[in-house]
Image (cartoon, rainbow, N blue to C red; front, side, top):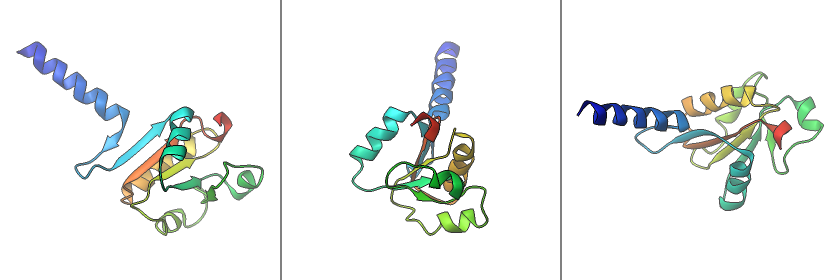
Length: 123
């Protein structure tokens, strides 16, 4: 019985590390480049957000992305203008800012948010 209980605890822990979900089925998850590209091709509708600075954005981005600077004034207000029910795909340069932004999206009630592992530098 103890072994079964420990196995259950380990399984639950592994699932919680893979992604964050709540009872309503919301997802906030970091995914690989191949998974990110798969989401871009398989989702009927999504919002692609580059959370880098305008200068970084101006030097190149993923086609179709809009720029909402994570470090800029009004970041939360600007993301709250997006549709919270439409999946959001986010990225920065290397993954640090987008990891923080992922938490902000989640805290603000977005239903599905995917973050690009390794950022634009990995693209």
